Amino acid sequence: MKFWLTSLISVLCASAQAADIPVTLYADAGYPPYSYEKDGKPAGLYYDIVRAAVGHMRGYKVDIQSVPWKRGMAMLRTGAGFALYPPYMNTKDEPWTWPYSLPLYEERVVAVCRKDILAARPRKRWPEDFYGLTIGNNAGFIVGGEAFEQAVRARQLRVEEGRDSETNIVKLGLKRIDCYINDRLSIQWTLNQLKAQGKYDEGGAHAGIAEATVIAVEQGFLGFTDRDNGKYTYKNDFVKQFDNAIYQMKRTGEIDNIARNFFKTH
Image 1 (cartoon, rainbow, N blue to C red):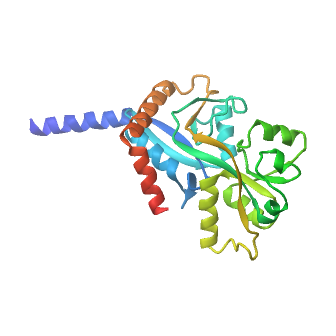
Image 2: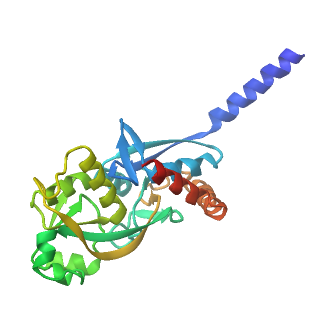
């Protein structure tokens, strides 16, 4: 009898595990320290937050895979991908992304420039004080704001895209671009990593750079595809459970603890 009960419990547990719905979430592979790839696996602050959140959920077996940002956005646009982090909320330029989760973390988008560019004249008003310059941007990122996009269309300034933060910072140091726009922490973290690895010789082989101005305060989200035509039948429940997990993690201070521990070790 004892053997029979043990076997039954094992079968029930196995059935429960088998019932978990497999879900793949995609993560930006080139946005350190928030979201990047390390040793072939996703890493970063957002990875730690999302991994903790799905750990509070039930009924899903979640796999997180890192992809280049433009590819991830293309997957949302076609419905081939279920969800991607961490987009900013932008329903105008990315109407295929909906819904968005509760915000995961707050970021500050800034413009950093070569010091010789900053010495030439004040660069505080965005984007007016940057007309005539070449601005670096991560491929697929939309972070400069509407006035910036209008200036680009009017050819008042030029945008040059690079694959990721590291690529753009090196281009800035080699004077291939004049300024670079991205989150402040991502720029600082990546620059420090490049210096530690001997890949950025500031003031020597590479130009000195400094922050020019704050462009915006943004929030990172887990964004879901709106182009799946009902393919992901579990989407509403997943979004509800994920948002509830994020809400509880904020209420209890878990997200603050995750961020604190992350930056202690990075």
